Length: 93
Figure 1 (cartoon, rainbow, N blue to C red):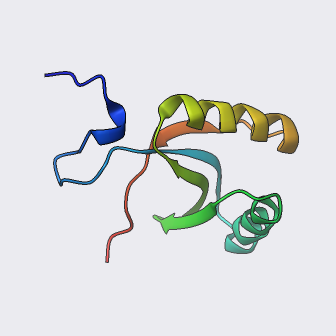
Figure 2 (figure 1 turned 90 degrees about the horizontal axis):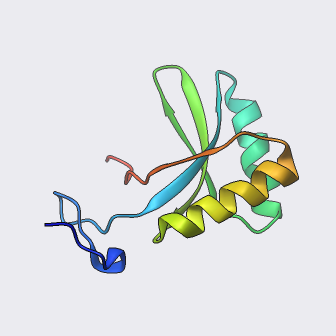
Figure 3 (figure 1 turned 45 degrees about the horizontal axis):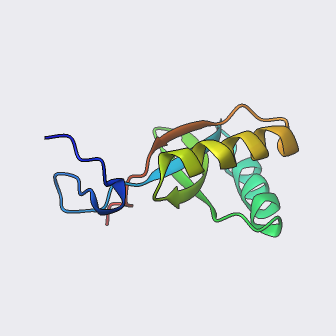
């Protein structure tokens, strides 16, 4: 049941499958906010998700995994970070 058209692929909750780049996982929220601000100033859709004492900084979501990988590579070079592509998870209310 593999679908090749990823633009229309939905997950089990009916949410379109998309991707984000996780760039950092910091214990310090101020550091995560500063990185988010830097990335946004460069035109990236950066956001922070906090759980279990960690503040993770992401860029995304992006519909195509290949585009997420390209963005990861560009940011890794620009920011000297080692980001990786993850499935985008909508924020829980």
